[in-house]
Image (tube, rainbow, N blue to C red; front, side, top):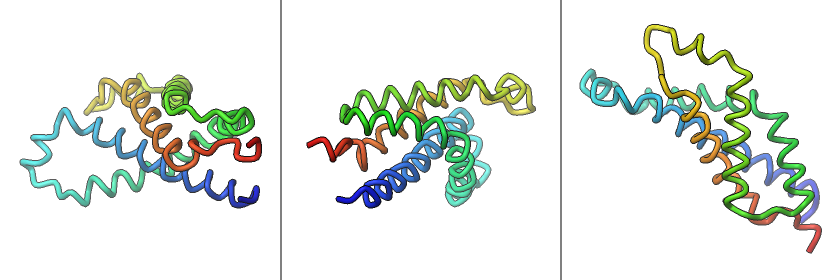
Length: 142
């Protein structure tokens, strides 16, 4: 596999990881009110629309720090699933401290556990990235 092909695989894996992180965050944020939402007739397409809107936001906010972490992981040929999960959770948690989350939680409908949700979505993103690109990290070193 050429370097360009590897970069394309890494980019595709990053996009899929952002989709997974967005889905975990959306479902986690809606879970406490799930019965109310379903009884009010919320269509399932609305949840996927929220995921579709949140995916580019997550991808944009996390792009540069994630690129740095992935370059280091690729350079050292790290292939551990636990490492990618831990790095994803730690990166999402670290990025959450740059956001003004207490101001968000004071809105009419607070999420309440936003830092835990962000860490869980980072872990999910790290696992999905590992599944598609992390297992073969450092392919040039073999």
